[in-house]
Length: 194
Ligand code: IMP
View 1 (tube, rainbow, N blue to C red):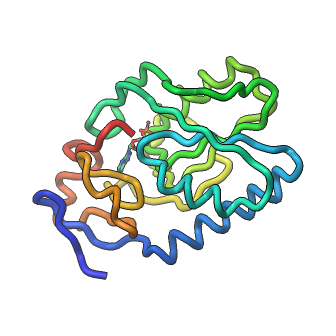
View 2 (tube, rainbow, N blue to C red):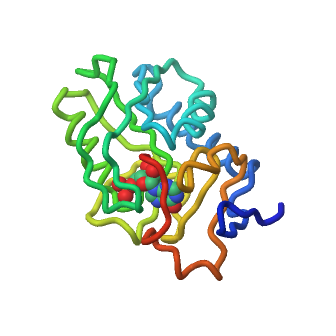
View 3 (spheres, helix red, strand yellow):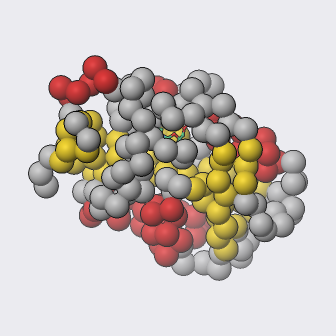
């Protein structure tokens, strides 16, 4: 697959649609085994996780439910974000088995905030499933039970993830090419709220 340009930045393919599909299918199988008979609720974090969540949900073969939340006020430039509010939790999660579904865990601040918030409802259990994890960017230790793939701290886009609002529709995952790395590490690369 060819490199692409988004605004003035060049991106190369990092994970093909087939590789993404394999990763999602493997996660779906693990979750199906681990949660058999437990009717878990997936809580997908909008916007970035919507594509992954749709595929993951269909890779899960056991009875399960899905709902969506949005994190308000995540700052544009990567992950210095002060998370303020979690919007849209419509299901009663008390006593339920929760799996938070995220596109990417970068600093981990969003997840830490979500975990703190959801625990106040006393779910039976709570785990995180993230398509991508940037371990080197984590600000403090975070237990992500289901990780599709660990990646270096470079900016990625596609398969639901955006670059300043665009690129979510790309079927592959793209990474900023090396020559643009001076602009990477999240310092000057914008993405929308989650
Ligand atoms: P965290 O709070 O730093 O873990 O940030 C997680 C959120 O930052 C994700 O849900 C994404 O919206 C965004 N993010 C972090 N890294 C990237 C990236 O490389 N591309 C696109 N969005 C990213």
